[in-house]
Length: 130
Image (cartoon, rainbow, N blue to C red; front, side, top):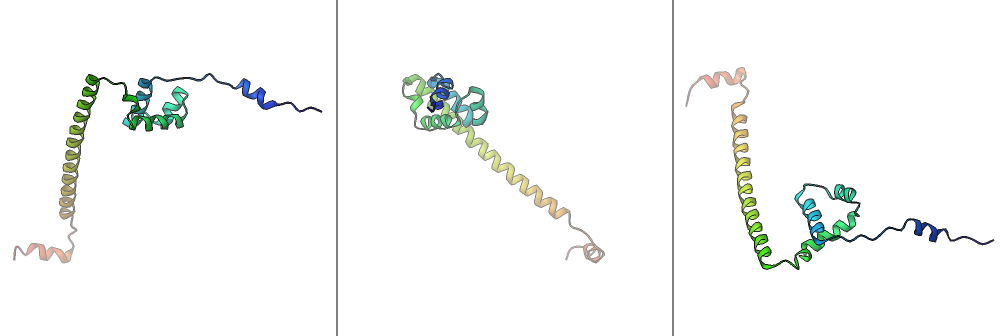
């Protein structure tokens, strides 16, 4: 009795065509994940890409691989955009800190105003300043 090699048959049926993606496409996917506009899982499902591949693209993006062929004008635009975003981040960080301080002050005032007056405290509170 001869055994058939079913593995060869399955691999032939399930063989996929190898796709290639442009650096612009990879950059768009990575920037969508990094900015939070879409999750890695959502993009992987939508474009039928392995999440592992998106992780690889993220590593490549961090090392600047997608920007190797960028000319000096485009590079200057990118650097300007980075500076703008850094300034915006600084402003938003300061605003966030100020809002936290205001919230903390407001909370403290509410705690001070909400003290419970009992019959024991009532006589003391009516006595005036000492």
